[in-house]
Image (cartoon, rainbow, N blue to C red; front, top):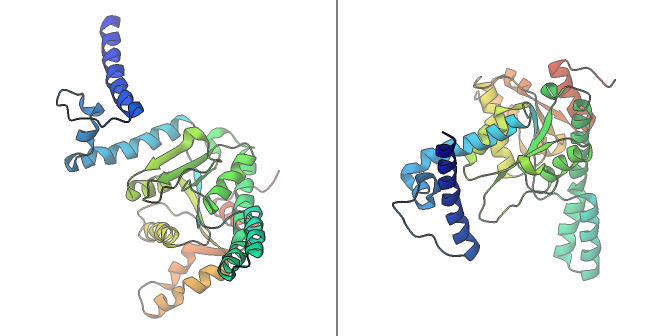
Length: 291
């Protein structure tokens, strides 16, 4: 029996070694009907095998997170384009030296929005600090889209407290690499937005949405819809930055036109401080305050 298992493992290793050898040499991998199916990229990338790729993107992050004790997360969304106060200050100094009005306008906007980066970082520190007092099964872990900006800030805050932190990245035409504050073994990359969003919700106990663009809105409104239609259990949905969200999104119009109910306004809360955001989550679940 042991010999059979060794032989099987050897063949699997050989299949992967062949793939790695081609990749290391930069050589294209030719079609080969004799290649093991799981080690045949041309086969796995066919339209007909899309369902298998769905399943793989579902299983890999799920199994890896479960193995590392990630059962409950606080998901933080927000713009990838907001930078840290330090980076914003450096851009401002560079723009001032260039005497370029366009560069100066961009630097001023970056500096104006940099406080959101710092607030996301501080919020994540609050979550990680609370969880550090608990058994691993009861801890809350920060999960983000894994990129720069607000995502980086939240991963950074948790990382600074010594906590594990999750990044669910996405392969994009303009390549978005994982930020350096994600726990390496919890840094995942997705091809399919749908599977990525499903993973956000599979473990989410709360969602905190900072100001962001189309991606943030897509993720935010999907979560609101899932909660409204009771496809998932209710979770606190926190809109951080009331000035931004109230300018961008006016649900009162939707109520006046009868497309949502007045009660739907209770699905989310506006906050402007990290402690306020944490209090919304803590009160929702009846969690104890600082010990």
